[in-house]
Length: 418
Length: 123
Image (cartoon, rainbow over all chains, first blue to last red; front, side, top):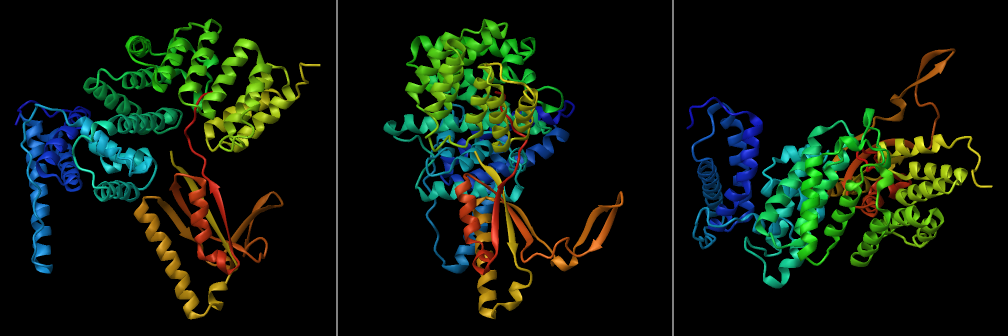
């Protein structure tokens, strides 16, 4: 054990998050039972989080965690076996141990693919990924998602049951399934990122850790799959979006739209890294949805002032995105870009194509974009009605506040259009 | 990804007393079944049942001062009896839970309301 003064909790936590998937990988390969191994690693992580800050980090932290987790696992099996013994006196056959070659492979990808197994619902995929790959405790995840710890514990254990029922093992899926399974992983990382990013207006800073966690895992994934343009695209998108964090809210958590943000508050280093990543990826990879979204974010980021924004290029990118992954949310953004290029009535015409879309009718975002374009067109009374409609429909307090203030600004205004 | 919904339970005060024992058992068994399901699915957030409406204190301003009276402000056929909060993937799922809540079978009704949250996206 190191004799240096005890490391601080944050440093220990960083180390544990890095080691968590490695230790779980070794254990799961050796023993097979993912469910039990995951519990054992979680217990070892909790023990380390309590002991290391006071006692110091052991010389071989990975070995320490592996030893403690293995002990927990054998304890658990011994007690289960004793119980089973009393009941039916038959032992389940122990799985064939796989050879452990520490350090010669990284199990993070296998783990991610298992945690994002298609048999699980997205909330379960997110919970299991954060615990098994991110090394977060159930209490931390529950806190981040504002649900009781017991509820989150249940989501994790149910996720593991479903993996077991689906017959999934701790192994790489067959090559013909890998691409689709990897898309699910990217989606889960994107969900985790968004949960943290959208929370940055709220009082709860712990939720914004999710943003850093998603970026950390995406970075690790890109290290494992440097030839996947969508992994690079997702990481670039996260970096370019997160770069705006300090500028996106004002006093009291008030949301500030892109055009009104103080661009000097944007994180230049994150923009530079994200832009370099996406520029490079687009030279060798066929464009995918994350790459195109990252490219759009990069075009916004390169404009020093809102009026410098290259809207024709953004419009072209949204059209490409609509083609790659048709989705009414993309159409909304395309309508805004079209309004900036060809004027608000062109944008409003495109919005009309969403009126019959059951996914969008009654959605606050459709009303909010329509309000914005009507305001651009000088139809202030209609714009005010649409802002109010959007404010009533959103379940987000910061968005409601923003939309109400936009509506209030138009109060008493006569239409600018005769 | 998930949205929290509050399911508000409205029923007629005292209706449980008028049920047969078998009906009462079935009602509580239904509640147990749904609660167990919500716990196992990881959707349960919380919930409370309220005391009988006759125990209510009502506070309203009168003559510039808050005045307290015993009992609900209005004698209603139905009262707000309690709530449960769930965290689920869709409004359809929340409505489905509400449809199965047994009070609905005995003349009560449920309201499904989304909870406001602190997350927001700039536009």
